[in-house]
Amino acid sequence: MATQRNVLHSVIWLYRCLLALRRSEPALSIGSYQAVTVEGDNAAQQSVLAFIREADGCRFLIALNLASHPARMSLSAIGEGTVALSTHLDRGGITVRDYLELRADEGVTVVLAP
Image 1 (cartoon, rainbow, N blue to C red):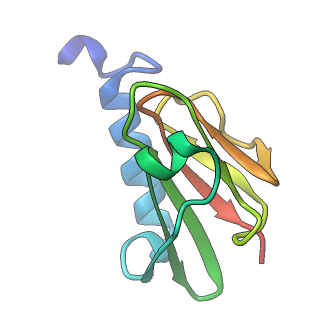
Image 2: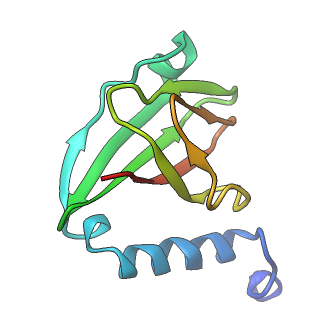
């Protein structure tokens, strides 16, 4: 575990990023919770867990692909946003519009546009 402390893309690094994001955004700790009905391909409907957290006008989409295969989730009912964090730690800052592509076993936190 000590060897992972300062290694980018390690599990400990991911936890640090998740905790920092949660501490900096009230919506992720005290915000309201709204389940999202997943629209998209069959894989997404069967394997993606998604919800929105909101506080003070700031909204986040959290989408978790619980399968070992990719899934594509429609954002038509949710709107566009910017990826804040991915479990792969490589998608921060990417804008997502019509669809959110989730890799196998990936979780993504998206800051939704107002």
